[in-house]
Image 1 (spheres, rainbow, N blue to C red):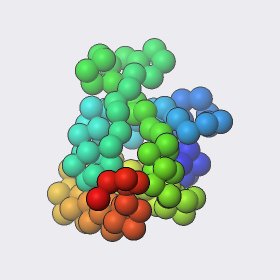
Image 2 (spheres, helix red, strand yellow):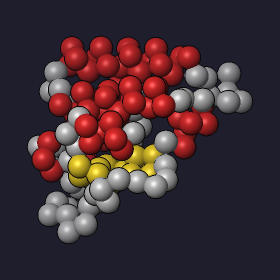
Image 3 (cartoon, rainbow, N blue to C red):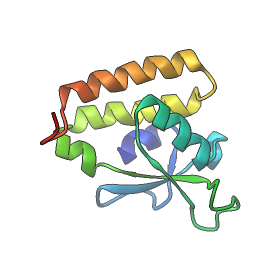
Length: 122
């Protein structure tokens, strides 16, 4: 996920990750953590806004996002699906003002998640 996001223009605060968690700095993308959290939730990708080190924005806004892969790996997502989600995250952020694009992304998210039901949930 970190590699995909970096390849799409995002900055990972630690330069990468050794586990399932990452903190993404959105500053260069012209998007706040609050904006990204809201639009990503609308398309069906759940994330949390998060402050980055020395964040110039207040805690209710933030300059970053905290992402993790535990939930999707539990559902059975593999490398391909996680890379696809990374690209959808970036596409959503980059087109956050375009309802048509966001609607298309939501459909893609539903298609992917439909292939990997939540364990124990019917």
